Image 1 (tube, helix red, strand yellow):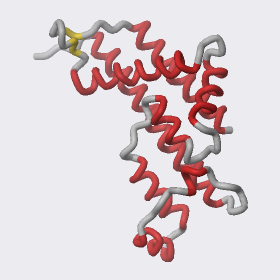
Image 2 (cartoon, one colour):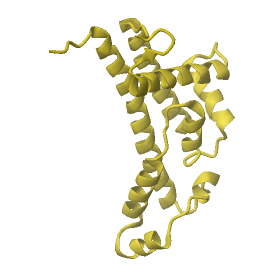
Image 3 (spheres, helix red, strand yellow):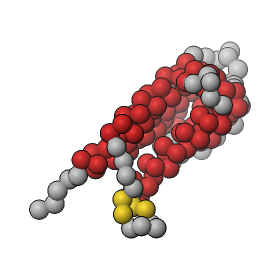
Image 4 (cartoon, one colour):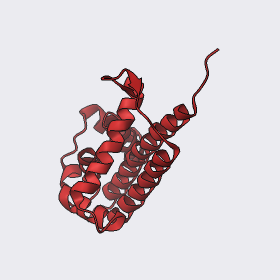
Amino acid sequence: MSQVEHTDLYRAAWVQAVSALDHWLHREIVSRAIVIINDRPAPRPDRLKAYTVSWATVEDMQNRSIDDVMSEHMTERLGRDSYQKPDRIAEGLQYVTHKKQGQIWREVAQIILPQRTVDEIKQRQTEIADRRNKIAHEADIDHLTGTRRPITAPQTAATIDWIESLGLAIRSVLN
């Protein structure tokens, strides 16, 4: 019979928090893109203007609503992207904002921790995503020692709080 260590629950919470951010960003980007697509006179962000669809997708729009077709298409295509690390997050957001990557992160940093630099904010998110990947893909084992990396309840709670703050800051930047 195997036993679950309490640290396994911290690891699961860490992975789930990062996955929740990634999932929310995908849904947020697609839903905002559909609003922009339907706002005909509004200028489109460059990344959305450059978004391409196949002829089959265009033909599908003859029988179904553009909203439904584009929502499905973007969900499927963007589903291949990971919105966990800062540059990838900013790339995804550029479908729905005219702001460039640097501006997005400057504004996020001002909301989350104004006393910190943009690089510090991005580094923190990168570290969280990297740790998530070590947990999910390497069982959180330190290859030098062959043992699992330490993890604590306060570290995990701080990570979850960070991700919540990041999501709120991103929403604020987009509004």
